[in-house]
Length: 137
Ligand code: DQA
Image (cartoon, rainbow, N blue to C red; front, side, top):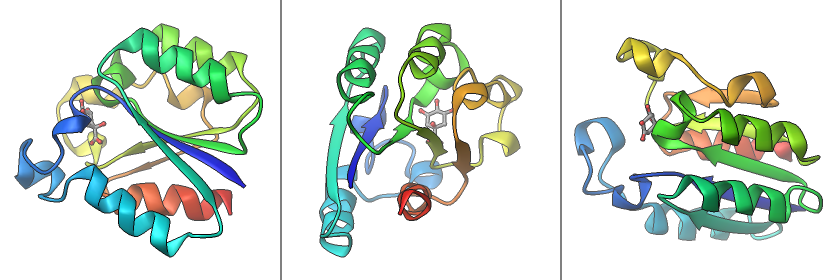
């Protein structure tokens, strides 16, 4: 089972960025514990602040991996191109968010990922990623 987690813009700052919303753990710390817990899964991680790099990564793994867990950050609410990329690949994508985007500003209620995703998990902190992983298993 090959799963890739993709984090989009500003998520490299997890641990430092608005900790009251996103928590104080870095994603790298969380990823180490996730890999330990799910040692039987071939789990990979990619982060980029650049829209085109996220699209390139979706194309690269989207015909061979079993699942993609995608937190596209603010691109969720703006990127028709990432939505189209998900439409164009075969690997199912689960949209995740650390925060409950539906309890925040209205511009966060729009998602160009959701119509093309297998499902959405939002609002459970970093556990959102683990719940998405569980659903692929
Ligand atoms: C986020 C929610 C987005 O609205 C925001 O732009 C992010 C993080 C989340 O994980 O809660 O960067 O995707």
